[in-house]
Amino acid sequence: METEQLGVIMIILVSLGFFVMIFGIVYLRKREKLAMIERGMDPRSYKPQSAPYQNLKWGLLLIGSGLGLFLAFVLDHSLFKSMDDDSFFLYIALIAIFGGLGLFLSYRIEKKEVLEKQDTLQK
Image 1 (cartoon, rainbow, N blue to C red):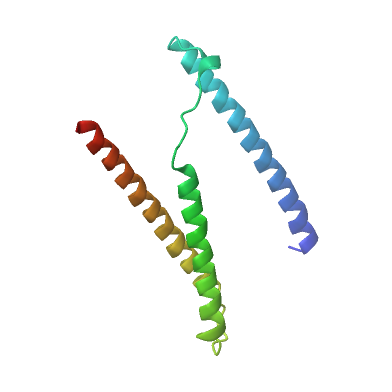
Image 2: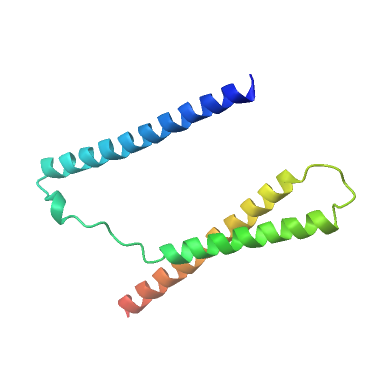
């Protein structure tokens, strides 16, 4: 295939994917509201629950990913400089590892806070 054909196919696929995504979101919201009505709930008074640790989770994920990217850059330009190998997988692996460590740290902090709240309520 030539690049012009690939460009046309990509435009069609991206447009189709965007349409399917919007349609799916609208369809699922309507189904959710109908299920609430069937159970006798008022969908207009429904407010989604807030996630108190959402900012912490995203912050630690982005910090971990940034550290992984920085470490991959440093390793690529200092330690693996002599290798002609493509270091794409080094970048992906370190971003994933440090991002996962950030999420794990977020989980441990949330768990610690919840356990502390339970201990204070029991006393």
